Length: 152
Length: 374
Image (tube, rainbow over all chains, first blue to last red):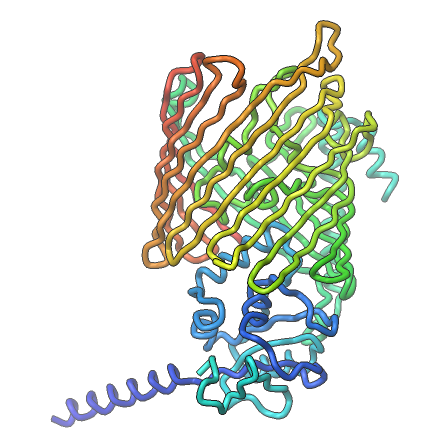
């Protein structure tokens, strides 16, 4: 009986953890010195596909990606699975494309440091982790607190 | 160092001494590139460090074409190393060195190939305008700039109807457009609303006995490529053109025009290419005659990916080496299945049913391969 109760509690905890992860709100962040305040979904897609390599002020885009949220970010922004996105980048690099593939971070602090130290950096992370060391962008004019924010 | 490169060129292109000379120079060049990378700012600084990429593959193949083909064999086909060194936000140096068929060079024997596939300085003014100077892969069709990067191919081999060697009117066999060019190239991407266009225009030495160093005629290799991505983002259309005079064959004119299309929807991938080429014939004295032999080819490929891992595919291709005459057509039908162990590691299996005109009976060719990108 005791073991069964522990098992049930463990399952409930697991479900709660998974549902929290699934509901993670993704913040798109840039360096604090980047004049940009808003980015369109189209521009975000083009940047992470390596089709756009410079910001409107001429600064080179330096892509970063946060491993725990990559799958949901690529699904939402690129409409691609992680595998397809990787294959896309392989084709781009090996055919001489000018874009530099994203630098991958497993640790959110490393991700933030990278954005903080790279003037052209753009990345994504859980909204809860985005502090004042980075600048949070609105997407198509919608702030992360908006009901219809596209990366919820 | 510069003098040494010239010395290698002076040794010619096809002898062992020259090959050894090139191998040593390329090794030193790679070491220098890696040293530059090690000296670059580490850590989180603005990206200006050496990047290294590449690919490797190995094949096992057998065919029933002839006695030699019936002996199944392994082939360590490619090991290519790509180095990219960004000098600053605008300039970068891109280089690719290829080792093919497990090369081994010694004074007494030479196996496989080692060569510089690409080496250029690139200047980026914006996404809409970039300039490349050096040796580049000719922007032609879906595959030529992907070159030999088999981890990114569906089949183990690029379609021979478009990228293979075909009978030339004046000498042996050759590609219908130059694989590489040495010269300058402008390229860029333009977008408006949901339309997007990528253009590439170039001027190179064209083909000849020493295309990377000395052109032997004033008629350069000229060409371009245009890719349009439609608002239906799953469809891309491309067109390519290349023309030069072949310095190996009394400067006979060669033209190639290609059209291609790719369609991706969910797990479906379709692609097709058409090639139309014309080769100038030589007259009795060996001079270009002004009369052209026409060649055309095409292929169709369809693939479907299950569970992001398993990709069965089929391809049909046809080539008419000389559409003015009968009996010069070849075709090949390929059925295959690939398994992606990871996005960078692919296991491939395929069988090709080939028919080569009237001179060679139909035969089957089987190849299994493993291809890795890194």
